[in-house]
Amino acid sequence: MSFNVDQIDLSMTDPTTGLYLTANVYYVDGVTDATDAPRPLSIGQLVMAICLQRAAELETQIVSMMETMNLTSAQLEAMTEIETEVVKWPDELVAAGLVARSLNNYRISSDNAAYPNKTYREALVDMGVIADGIRYVRVSGTPDAEDIMYDDFINALESKMDEKNSFSQQTMIELQSLTNKRDQSYDMISNILKSLNTVMTGIVNNT
Image (cartoon, rainbow, N blue to C red; front, top):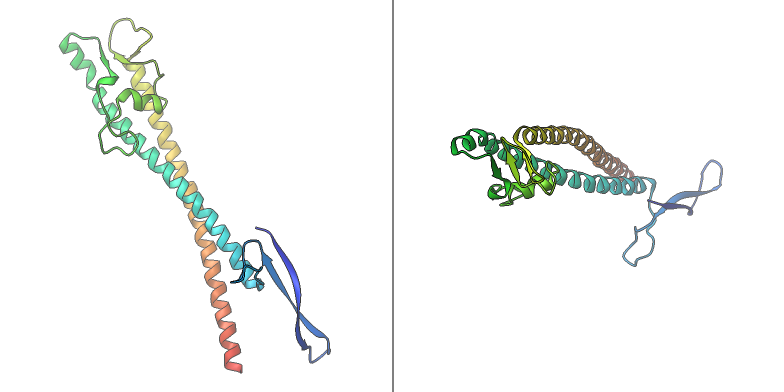
């Protein structure tokens, strides 16, 4: 925010010195009156304008950070859902005489905010858990280009979950810091308004 300062003649003199009194007024970019002319502000109004802009900037950052946290939370839910299902595969595949299962045959729950009804493979590729070419989780035998071995898959999944949890915790700390700064800006505005009201009340009572 940029602003300019000017002096205005108060059309009165100091009773002690006899000098004409002046006062500083401030003009802030984007702050205009009803005629679209720059609106002169007192120092209190200038501080409020600065605080309001700062609060608005912080609010934008907070909203963006909350959206990021919501996405991270939805991704963690998706990975937890996948892990809960895939952890059963070794026993099921052995019992069925199979060695691999396709990630394209399973889908994320429809109520997941990030990947509703997406296949496990689509979600896992998007989250960076597996490469785009991987199609199957293999529990035995020799893997090919489309396979990932079960143990490697679980390790990659849990590593990504740990990464997302750490990111979420750090984001929560940053979000709390931004929220505190925003609240401080609003508190300062409130205090200035109270002070201005006290001054105006005093002027009225003395007239």
